[in-house]
Structures are given as structure tokens and as C-alpha cells.
Image (cartoon, rainbow, N blue to C red):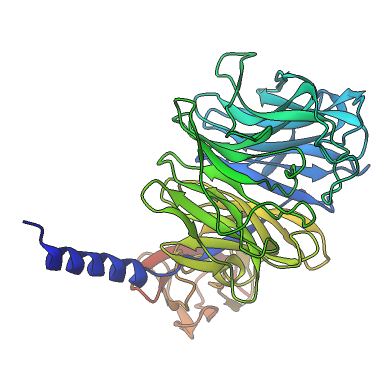
Length: 486
């Protein structure tokens, strides 16, 4: 017998529990690199290795890998051209790279978007070695992501001249396109390339996301109605299952509009549960919204932040948390973007979830790992665009000043202002002197920065800070200062 009432009650409890969960908050790190006017973090793995690119002093673009706060330029020796970018990294440190070669593209298609006239080529980087990936007989290719099996997704040109391709430059600044390009998966064996199938009537495509089951997500259409990345859009958002079959995911009411930048349908990422996120055109064929697709629910409109009209879901982790951008148009380039998070049926402006003192205004989030760390790019106070790492905040005491190891002053200020709260709310502070330390007078022992007056005893003094957040979670830290006497 089906217990309808019980099912409804359980569902209500689950929904209430999800709603009652505290909003996540994030500690924002400016990845730099220092001195670069433009950088972007594009992806990350569960070990905290981050991929992206940064502008060099000569304004060429260099592929970069960040780890534990250090930036490593992996652009050299590259594939012979001046510009490179790193887009994805798997758990073994295999990095998927897009690089210019040294040879000119005979069709001058500007496939990479750098405007140099050079060929745009896919490659893999690991341990200092850059390995080019094969094409399908054409001049250019672009990359999507790489999974833990060593398979990489993307697109590769063949040798077919397509009369449907637009003769002039597209609204994205790319083109003129001449050759067809097909969705592909490279690997896992070195030098292997596999062309993915297209829905009936479509002639071009791009595989953006790939999971550890070999399932991929992307877009397909004709050369006339498909926009290549940077801002991708096509007639159909599609899913390729591990058996090679292709499924049109549907849309939110509209189709592609090549006259409007980014207007169309594209599946941009897929997690190991086969959940797909991307962007889809609305009925007006002018605005597009982020979507989540599952086999159970089909395509669902995730919505955009209040006041915005366009957006995209760019990444999804194993828990189903989604990140991307919400934009007040008219389009993703000239509009005003905000990095966004969709979680448990709610949508958040990441800037509103950043802890106080964030060094950047977060514009777009491109990646999220299973620990909830998020990467993307944002603007600093001087207008420079830098990569960011957003780390879920923890309630953590930070007792200071750590730099003050000895003093001759009778009184000093302690500092607990660098302590963080997981829920973003105010902390309570309690400063004490642990057993074994000489006694001292603490004035304002429940303040973030109390005043300490030493006794006449010279030697090391230890002060302990305990912080408590609004949920009751606590954390303790201590600082020691050597009092040398007045």
C-alpha cells in the first residue's frame, strides 16, 4: 500500500531541512598573478589545483596553474604560438590546454579569438610536457574539460567547406568560419580521437563537459546558427551517453539567434550523476537563462538574480551545487555580470556571501569542486580583472598579533579580527590566560581587540581566544608575546 500522507510528510521535512540550512559563506582569495591586469581561473580539481590564464607584460595570454597560492606559468614551450590558456584539470594533474600554433590558419578563422591569424590547437599538459591533440583534418580545435579517465572533450575541424557558415565576422568577433567542426572526445589512449554523433539536421557541435563515466554535454547546430566560445550558443543543448547516443535536452522556449551574442542553447557541464547544466534561450530569443537537466525532471529554469535577464550555469559538482553568472544585459560582454551560486533550489549572488574584506567583486564563477571551492574572475578596486578562489568559510579563531613576538611596552592590543564565521554572522569573543602563563590584566576581554597590561614579570605571556558563531560552533587559538619589561 502506498503511504501518500507519510510520503508528503517526509518530503515536507526534507524541504524544511534544506530551507533551514545556513547559507554558505566564502573567504575570497585574489589569485592574481600580481602585476597582471587580466587573469581568469577556469577550473579546479578536488585537490585544490586551479587552472586558468593570465596576461603577460607583452599582453599575450599565458596558461597558468595555481596551487597553494603559487602561480605556475605552463605556457612554455607550448605549441609555438604566443597565446595559451588552461581550462580543466583532473585528479592526476592532467591539464587540458588550448594553445596557438606557429602556423597561420589558411582560412584566417580566428578560432581561438586572439586575432593573430594563427591556428588554434588543443593540447594536454602534465609534468612540464605539452602534448598536442589530433584534429579531424581541419586547421583548428578547441577544448572543453578532462575527466579522471584521461578523456578530454572539445571540438575539432574537419576538411569540409560549409557554405552555410557566415561569410563575415560573427557577433562574438570570431570568423569568418569556413570549415565544419565536430564534437569530439580525445583519449584515453594517446593520440586517440572519437567524433561524437549529431542530431538529425545538425552539422557542427562542441562537447564542453565530460564526466568520469564518459558521458558528455555540449551543443549542436548548423554552421549558420552556432556561436563558438568565448560565449557559446547553438540550436540544441545535447547530452551524449557513454554508449555514444545523443539526446536533445530541449529548451526553455527558444532557439539560437546568431544576431545576439550568446543567445541559444548549450549544455556546458555534467557531473558524475549525469546532471547537466548550461544555458537556454527563452521564448523571445533575446534572453537566456541557466538550466539544470536531469533524466527525472528534464530541463528546469534555474532563474537569474533579481534585476538580471540572462545567465548561464557553467559548472556543477557531485553534490549538485551549480555556479555560473547572472547578468543584467543586453549581452554577457557589455552587460553587468555577477558570479552566482544555485544550491538546494535557491540562488545566491556570491558577492553577498563573501566574508567582509573581499579583495574582488566577483563577476563570473567557472568552476566548483566537491569541497565547495569555487573559482572564476572578478574586479579589484583599480579595475584589474583577476582570478579568484572562494573557499567555504569555517568558524575559526585567529589570535594575534602573530607578528609581535616581543615587546617592551607595558600594554599592547590583542587582535582577533581575522577570525572567521562559517555563517557570515557576528562572532562572540572571549580572551583568557591559560594555566602556566604569567597573569596579566585584560581590558575588554569580550572584544575582538582588547588591551593587555603586563605584570612586572618578564617572560613569555600566552593569551587564548575562543570564538563562537551564531550556531554555537566554537574555535580556539592562542598567541604568545615575550614581555621584556619597560
